[in-house]
Length: 374
Image (cartoon, rainbow, N blue to C red; front, side):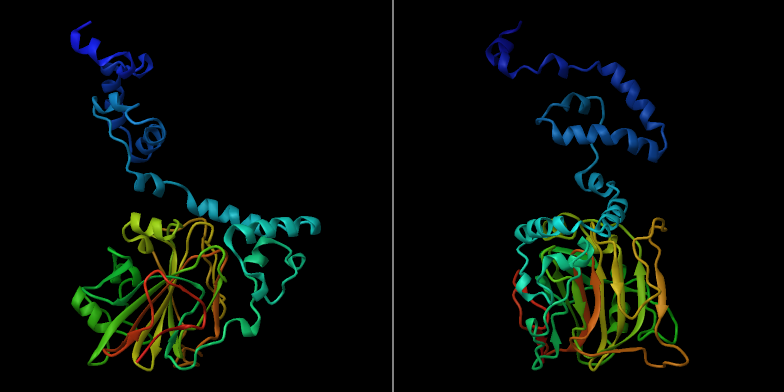
């Protein structure tokens, strides 16, 4: 034994089980490199999980022969969140025995801080399954709608970000952005859309801002599991078009939104677009883990979290018909839709330059409270 090893001491030496036959590993990795991408991903996944779970440096010898772990983001994206969400949805529909309802719902109330005094029905035995409990209605006086401001919060939740849209980039949380065109999707040159197609970032934004002197604004509201799960119309407007993006169902909590760039563009979402008194207006309901079910009350043709879909695909539906030339009129505060558990609402709209938000990033907000006004 050399003197340097003697000085280092036995406590710093790698355990015998950490020594790998490097030649054999090189051969094995060479075989992996010849595999198809799906097979290679399947074979690399267990090693990657061990890499992040075992003590630091336990699998370091593998790096000496050229192996690199899959990134944490890629590892998380490989989790079958859509399948898990469908399974969760099935579980939510199972009717609970009468004696089990109070303890199950009480545990949920204690965990997420639900205020049942606001519920239209406070008796926990009334809710036959978890789905009914998640979608519980509120007492009429629990959420008064602010009449003095032009835009109100469509839901309960937490304000993640808000402000003007700059350079066709929207912030999902502070410092993490996503592309406006990737989020809303390409424009379609049809007469029923409230805006014509665009070919570049500048023209894309200019086609949304239809009136001179106006700007484009955004607001992101995160709904936690304990929040009221229905969402409402944030202003008086007309919905003319719906675009459904099937996609992933990754968690949209603020920590995950800081971690994964363009998270909202990866996840399943339903984009409602139309017009209000100042021009373009849109509301997007973004799905999340265990929240594959997004329901729009006036859209019976919408079906979310389907077992199969093509990545990057989307489905368009127009509410403008020969019988209805305008679309679906919505009044401020009117019921619009619901989530099964909790997720995110993104508002993107056109307004004059003197529009001001009455918000602070990170604040809690309730449906009916003011978002901003002129």
